[in-house]
Length: 505
Image (cartoon, rainbow, N blue to C red; front, top):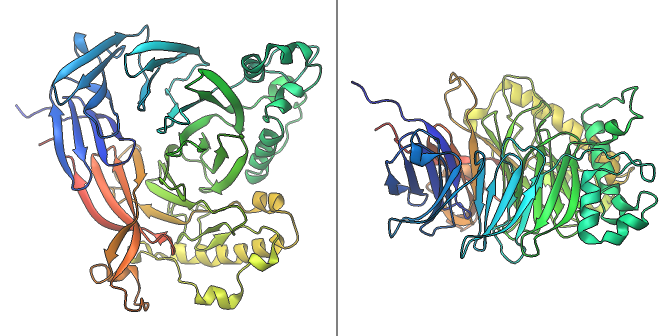
């Protein structure tokens, strides 16, 4: 009889993007990314969660329930070097997610979050949350910040004193000071913690960007409550820090930067990506992924916080560039390429947002002298050429408006688009969505002789090597793709290599 096909139930990078953990219907596997190769595997049944702690031998495992010992309610912590089980913990309901850093283990159920000390597996705290069927949480890698983030749609609380109070704002107020609740006679609960003004601006931008029209019945309290709240929780003090009103719709993805100073969020619509400061809750960046809705699978920062990658169901990976305050926010992607056949509004090269500073705008001569974003010849289509021409006109108009309007107005008209992008070479006939995850590596030197297509014949002087940024992408089909992008030019990423996990062999 032929062997039964192996299914992939879990796929993830470790915290540094140097290893891949995989759970299948037969067991689990650990791969090294560079050089690519399998260095640990175990065939002991189906696994739905295989979470690594950096590149250590510690693994967190959760089964899929195909065997009595592999219940989806049981967490196993093992040491792969010693081939030993460190501990086992059984929970009342199915485990949806497990996250680890060097001081904490977080176990997510549908309506609870359990926080453990990783050194002795002592239960530190349990958080009761709103139903979170996807187990969506983010945990900072840096134990100095040691933050947890999770979506928490607020519920309206009937109150004659404060008609706008909800479960999120009152819970944060209680954790900060019991006196704030007793003394609040207006909207100070929200303003005190910076959730109203910034959050309302985010909601207004959502409405403007998506052509939102107000419904006639918007005077009820329920219509004033938005589903896109994110709670930032301090894992050291075991106290919530703030509520960020990130989006109007429900949160679909969120992730911290490596140092924990930033958090990126995306809603279920998937058109707008936002980046917030975890110390103040202020919105620092807003990017447009595309015009049509799509499912966002992952958000990932580079370790130096210069770039943010976004993967989605269209099999496209978008790379956004995070500029410093005061710099012109420029995106140089060849185009959105979200779906070359769908007629989406696609991103163009050298997209920028006006910031009201005329001196910061590039002149025509400066634009001509700037290196154009790299364009992959295999992705050149008539549709892309037409869209690029249209988008260049739109960007010139946005720059002109930037001289007339404040940055907050022009950012609504034209949010920053991607700096670079790539389209996975997957079979378009495959039914269903291909889930993808991305990791941005550290800059490396690339020999220009080996990859002449990167430079399009442009003069590089006497340099034989050029600094490039590695982009790793894994897919639910079981492939690892290694790309590079020019951190100065942007544009289309170049595929260097592709590997298969060969789980069916």
